[in-house]
Length: 411
Image (cartoon, rainbow, N blue to C red; front, side):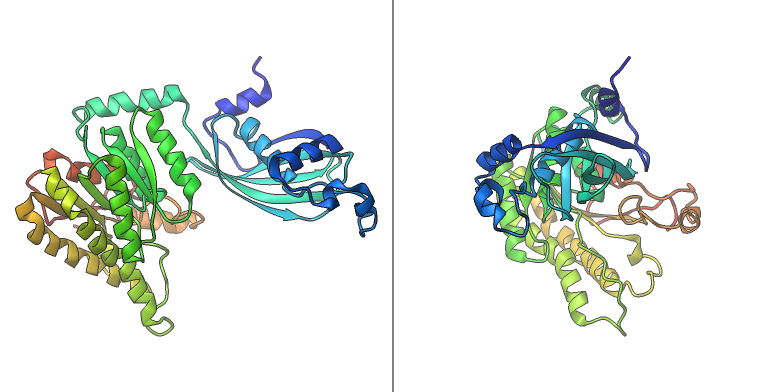
């Protein structure tokens, strides 16, 4: 018989409503140990005489003790040993008093299998459910079990002719989530060392690096702001230094889509989106140029979109303009950098499964999927496979192309 907590760590799928909990006591020893660990010796928590003169009438526990309890919940119960915290917010509703017996509970709100991402409602309550002392929401990446990683890796490498990118060094800007994270995984699977570019979600970037390293690869997180040319250039140099050079540069990020047309929007919406797209490619390519020249088989790949080939969605003015500028810049760079044996290509996916489609009504999803002869939406892995191909020697005579990954929706 497998214990319940251990069984939870072995699961591959979770559903909304799945729960786990444990009971504990907020005693003075716990408060004292937390104070020593955190260095927070505020007298409201530590001095009984002082606390009696406050409206609380007694010492109260540090609010962040709840954060430690949630860490235990996520790390040992839901999902368990394969958990990697991505974020946790906290709302403090009632003070925790010494001697209080509490129930720490987690309930799955959603599970995105494509991102291996659990969203969990977390609460600290009395044993009978009242009062609610602390509540919040956790986002948790579920790492694959080691045996699953081994099983998933070898057959795909054999199918694609072994480690096609062995020894190559790649920097993926916007690599911590969505299509970018799938690109990092695919390049790593094919043998490349990968720098994962991120803006604010360090935990996601670190988690991806841990995953890639667990597969026997090499990876490091690099922070940057796509809208800041200086930040982009500095990140490229940091990635090249950390990897010992650079062979592959991938622009996968574009920032949040601003859905405002010309009537409601401002030119700044357009210019800022262009800066995060074509501007980011310009500054990244310029900073990477010395390293790509030295490589002898440099490859630059930018993720565009099929909106440049078809009627764009209404009010997507900024996004469509930015992606169109990106295409023009990539084509120009292909001509300019070709003599240095540096290839520049684009991959243009249609609507892709992931964060952008989460919460979309099933009817709309079905209608969009029906536009493709293959009858489904693109997946991040589809886009990543195209990027890896263009980065490899198998595409050694391809430059200046825009490869649509859309299941035939655009012909």
